[in-house]
Length: 127
Image 1: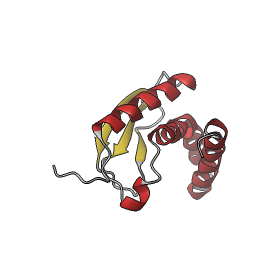
Image 2: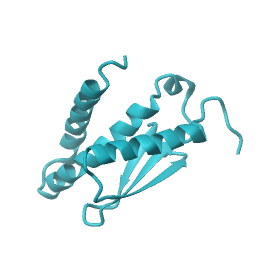
Image 3: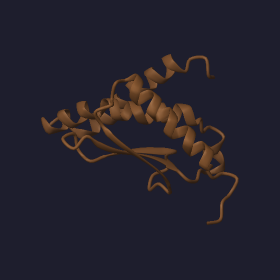
Image 4: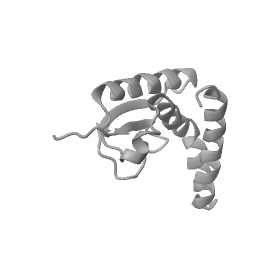
């Protein structure tokens, strides 16, 4: 496969995995089965947290292989891993809320607001 200077590296993928595992341990999310992949994403993001439902407790953490030149300059692997683990942390809340006929479009902005708050408190010295 041909790579560009904007591609994420195998070393960055290893850092992503180790940071995810660190935060999974920190938040006590050890009852989840977590697999990691380094592949092309269908979204414009750097990474994804893919769920297979709450009952199965299975999730795939994916780091995108490529980024645009613009997005690459903003990519922070550690913070990206933290963000995806926060997605895992908050997923059961989203699952329950959507099962109770709350409008789904209300959850994503609320979830990302909480994650940004956590990012800002944990990574306040990283600006």
